[in-house]
Length: 157
Image 1 (cartoon, helix red, strand yellow):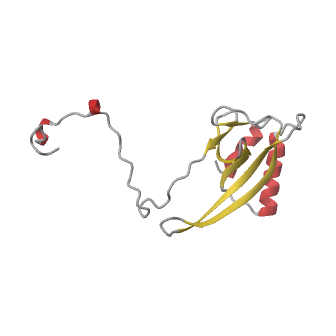
Image 2: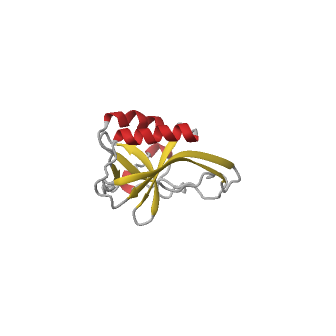
Image 3: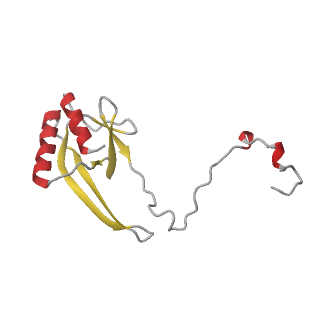
């Protein structure tokens, strides 16, 4: 989700709630302790120099049980961050500590924000020597084409 998308959603919400992809809720008394931009300059295994920029939200579970973040407050924090840091309309990455600090993509399910698990991937699949994964088929799904000339004993298999 891009920053512009969350800014369009927030005015329609009274409270802000985050849920992990596995259904676990971020406690409702969480704090947004940071909104910023993270720039990552790196080189992939194929030698290509890359740059990523993301808007970073850090959620923190404080033992402040009386605290509830209202959508207007989060929108104010976002606007202030844009003004002071010059943040662009980048994809949002959320940091949240469960067992360890995790980084998540952000989606909205119509009612709440969902922290989607991120996965690693090779960005230079053509250069790193990892063969493409073959599609797995069940033998029951295969049908023999009689016109192909591929029959038992024909040597085509």
